[in-house]
Image: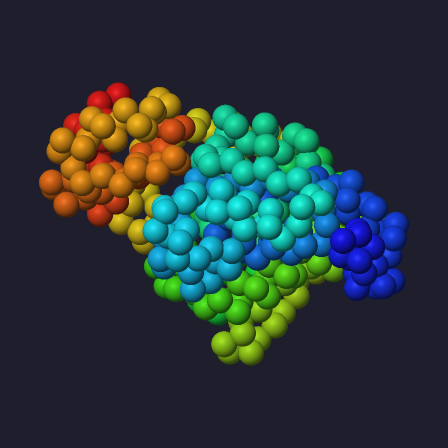
Length: 336
């Protein structure tokens, strides 16, 4: 199969053509979050022939993901595959002409620069504003565009923030948006995921092929259940914006926390030193029911909670929203 055959319909589109396809081939993108939005984003960019894509995600595939996270299947669930790995496995069978990397970890202030420093654009597939502000600050510090998207229930929002051309995410959203509804608390339907991710990708493609005059330059919101659509044109950046005006990048200055409550999931993430998960599986097998994979260990505890251990040191304590209890179980069974 030739490259021309693979991308023949895309090459016929005047907005891309041979020169645009060459630019896509030479482009490098980062997708943070390989859940609902992330899987659709990844599917589009890999099939479009973007030359290098890096997926970063901290989670693993669960049955509740399959309703909307389009790259996963029931076998991924039974094998408890990390989402980044499962997505890579699927898309490497779709397009062997591009390079795909997958990293299983939590993106935080201490490592975000290592992911953003060598890409042309970053696509937001996350589900929380803490990480979005982190990506926003990292992108604007390194002068990299950020493709923002968010979905909940039947509503979605998307925008492309470009340093030097537009204000940043912090100008539009503000710190107060860090708390609110999430898919885990109020649900989501799959069609809005596909729509918002598709809007994200088309703006990314415009930017990468050099069609900047065609960029939408709005924050777009859609509610497909109530049939509403609106676009808010970019205004001037806020004069006191700590990111795009003052270059203070507050999210990058925050200390990476070792304990995070995952909203609506009865799960506390506790960080620690890297783990030898094979050794931990052996140790825990005497006191817990164990499922072991090359990527993680799940341990169902006598207390009823479940631990999910990752090699990078993260441990998910599932079945509680009590941080103190989560830390107690972590200290009892992990011990460092």
